[in-house]
Image (tube, rainbow, N blue to C red; front, side):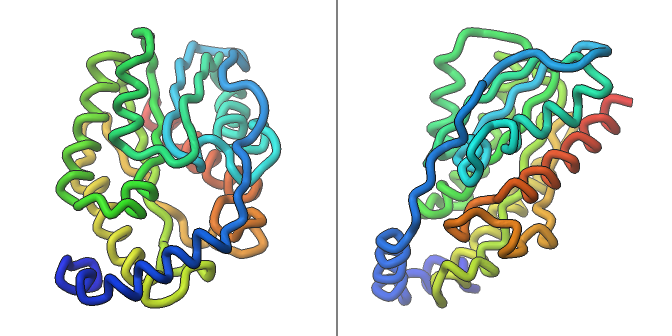
Length: 234
């Protein structure tokens, strides 16, 4: 109900004021420093592409070694020779990521991991548009980059973010669940959905801004992905 256009229209003045207040108070953190491509490990070749928004870019930790990309590569490098590349930036939406990937040189990857949706959500993209763009992204990764397995990270439970006041928190939470259903419902034949593990939403594990992951969250996320990727390739 809270995700319906009628309810959002009714609450629009309150939601706008709260959103402006959150942006004004928010601590702006940089993307993680460090390499965004490389080769690591020993074993069968695994070509890995990671793309997405600030969470993929490692906002919340100092170095890529602590971020999703670095920790995922480390987890996979015990069984594979991982050729990896990170294409992510703060604020990226699904549409912007599509445009960015279309502009890259053609390069084959076995596995892609994407982390997208929060910026589509905060920009109030309709669920139908999110679905269309996510389907287009999956098709692009398969046709242009030969991706066999595409892992899409689930949206975090926005209704549990203490940084967000109510009713903004409740409305964004309802919309996040609707977006996440899109990712689950469109998963098929090498297109996977990894739901957000809500046990990771411990304030002690989050970054200083109370919004982005901290190193423990990135580590748990990377371990989940690594286990899923290994299982899919068995």
